[in-house]
Image 1 (cartoon, rainbow, N blue to C red):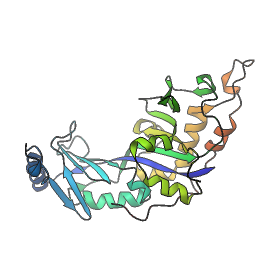
Image 2 (image 1 turned 135 degrees about the horizontal axis):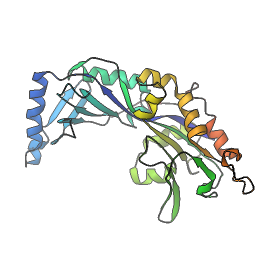
Image 3 (image 1 turned 45 degrees about the horizontal axis):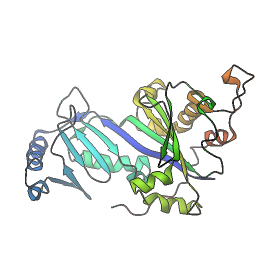
Image 4 (image 1 turned 90 degrees about the vertical axis):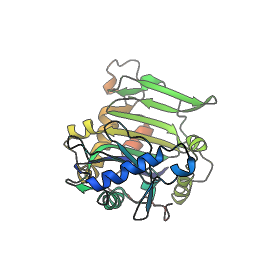
Length: 286
């Protein structure tokens, strides 16, 4: 039973410019965040619209400023040789707003921080499908996976099988894992409400198939901008689930693995139609 599908995480970059006055403001707030006194650290805040960002005490790589709240993790640069802003939109925020609407809200924030010179470039997008099944998810071994990836790993939590990881660290990777088990650790309880709305009975394990697609694989497909990527989710999902990775029913008598039949579960998951996105969204976000 399919419960929901969509974008779990989204990483965007924007060419542009950080103006000197904002640079000076952030520099001062960064120094406040570095104070040894906790009550002074708490003053390192930058309010924009309905957001109150925490200014971090240190930058990250080539980005001297990091601002974070529950919706956006923003890295800012004053160098013209790299993007002015690199932003992660949180998974929880994307359960409240669809990706294109969430990006519009992000633009309103970034325009208060500097000048945006181009529309959003996608650095990474994570696509997911949540479902329940009676299938035993460890009933096959690693040979059933036909993939271009080199690494195939299994995981467990307190001896309970928790899932598969294929292609870790590559430009494309896949996880098939017990999301209800993960929620017990991450406490992302907001997903439970959405699953209930989709018909979940409240006790069957919910599994998630998730692909992480980095910029290198997106640009190979001629997709760089957010609007281009969102218009081609069916093509990306098809590539991920039919060309890059397949779950099969191994046939020991046939040495040509590409001819092995598709596992019925994989046939179902690979056929999700991304043009029929009717996922419920959370009405509130803190």
